[in-house]
Length: 110
Image (cartoon, rainbow, N blue to C red; front, side):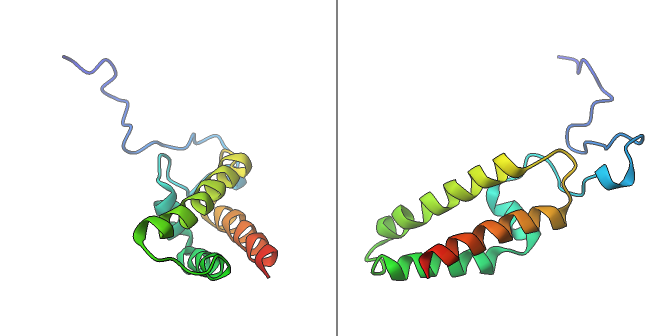
């Protein structure tokens, strides 16, 4: 089967050249939550939240109990990103979205 649009390179989406500088993004599209957290450098910060949550819940006794605690945190963070994400967001802006959410969750635990 022939590619209907051979010029369409889904692997390397381009930013329209007519956008003002402040609206160009350095956030790649179609990333996993883990990739976004790593790209923004917030993995240790997220880990701090997870450890505080596990401590509050009395630790964990098995892998299943660990994931039972961690998965809702990751789900809530993903929702926060989806709600606050806007086209053209920079890596630094994404870092601030994640950082603000984690800080808020940590404050609630303390």
